[in-house]
Image: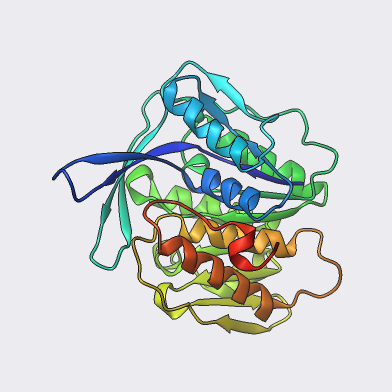
Length: 292
């Protein structure tokens, strides 16, 4: 089982008609990653705190439909976090967040993960907003020490980070407990570090998503591989990076022997491309990628 920890929220996505209208869509980087893993046919559990309001019920219904285990989900009466993306002409999105007093901020460290857990993925808002951020950090450290494969996607949201210097220092403190660091070019630029320094801190691989330029991985053994992006008609890029997370975890978690990085990256590029052809975070199903 792959465990994905972090927020589930509602994206209020702009639509063309009527002008100014917003369409509520399930979202949140960890939520999208768990959904994508479920659609790929992986054994996956979502670890979060989700509101008992109507939005929260809808979010969990989407995960159930994808076969995601919800036994680690905590519930609360607080409202669901809202995110309002604004779309650029190339389909990329910037976000405004409404997080005050929301349910996912109050996540508490679970006493244990299921016995079959072999990987843990964390990232995005959940590692910024306290007090939940400290609980997710404790989960990362505990499960890394137990030997789980860990994937970190910082998915930086500057609007939520009150003290950038403190966040950057905290990020560096996570790296000794991270197996795979996956981040976008924008994340890397904002964090201001170098791949070699990040690898030296602990991860076995750093995967960089580069939009239309594809994906690149650098490994602790000094290898570098790339995969081209698939040419598609882009509706938007919402959820594309989360789909990459899912594709990486699907291929890496529990895989015996050396990693075939060119094949892993190619699979991730194909999966992300399909997500980009659809509005909102709509990751592909296994059948669309020839897995069933």
